[in-house]
Image (cartoon, rainbow, N blue to C red; front, side, top):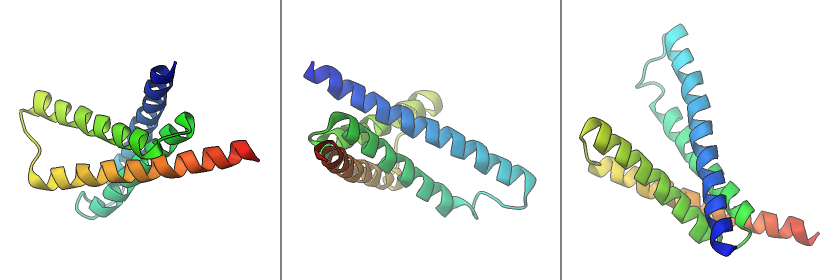
Length: 128
């Protein structure tokens, strides 16, 4: 039962990350299409949205699991990075460069922080 809830919590987090990213990608692409905004002007916004998505995914995973938030958030971030890596490697025949490696390390750390906060908020709400 414990491993099932671990996997389910990670799945909820990953679904949130990819759904949030897809919705934000649609909005940003519409902004780029119908305004004069370019990719370079939206680069920091896209990065911030990525961090928010990973934090939210870690938060949701930690809240579902209700224990070991750093672990569940970290695994959620690592699986996200693995999926992106596999997509990039198998689809585009490219490895991570150093900049992407730094970004994905930060994504994993942000997901860990979200997991920790998710566990603490979920645990405090269940005690009240």
